[in-house]
Image (tube, rainbow, N blue to C red; front, side):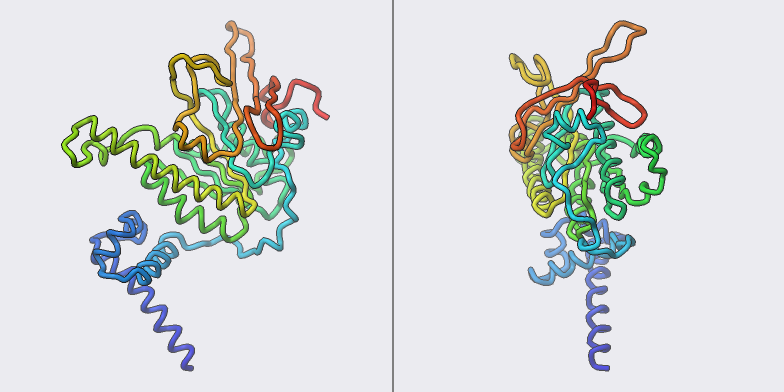
Amino acid sequence: MADTADGAAETEAAQDYVSLAQAKLGVATAGECLLAGRSKLQQACGLTASQTDQALTQLSLTAYPWQQRLLTSAQLRPAERWLSTGSAGLDLVLGGRGLLRGRVVELVGESGSGKTQLGLQLAASQLAEHPVAQVVYVSTEGPFPVERLGGILRARSQGLEPLGRVHVAELHDARAFMHAMEYKVDGMVRQGLVRLVVVDSVAGQLRVADEEDDDDGDGGGKGGGERAFYRRRAGMLVRLGGLMRTWAAAGCSVVCTNQVTDVVDREGVLGAGKAPALGSTWANVIDARVVVRQQRQQPGTPTRRWIALAFAPWAPPAQCEVALGSSGFESLQQDG
């Protein structure tokens, strides 16, 4: 009886953190409390460091009450070494049987080249190979392309049931993106159910300054705002990289699409005058880079496309020409 009373008291105290935070911060939801950040929460509510940890935990659980099936990682099939694309020829180019699992992989290319398509293709393969595993898909540049993923699954005779194991977050500003990655996605990965996280794209909300950066408080005007933005972005990328490496170390594959930016006097895998966005801070996060290129032909002729492994610790650089079909990209060299 005493244990029951103690448990009820603990639950009531935990709920008080949520109510206290909402009252002190003047907001209506637990999610808005989390967006305020740790230091502001602690100061507004007069909490100790330990109490702040408890408050953040309870706020996170309140904002994101997990509804998925409670399975353990032991119920999943043993982790294979490779993340397949579903095309044997393309898998061979990417390292043998696909991408090595438990790594942070960037898919980079110009707009319309097929980065999203390749990310969906990897998600479809993961869903097909592991009937209880789950995929997290974070979309920052528009609605989640559920019809395209469904089309790939149908083309592979999988039906639409696997779509129920895809957790989707559509995020349209940098703060919401980081908030979801640090609380929602991290919590799901730590449960051991998520085998693949796709971020499309990592650069979507981290390339343009927002209103917070109009003035950094030192009277620098526009230039000061730009400096504030780049400092804040670097901090976000470091935090994001730490999260992704933690997930990868736990066996969860992380695939991020990235945009390209214009550069002067540089020739690389993307061609002259083009380079991956987000600079060296982001480049130090990823383990491998896959480049998706296209070459538009004369009207009436199909667009040519190539997928290349630019670098990876498990395989040398390689590329192949691909064709886009109903089940995704297929290598034009003989699959087998």
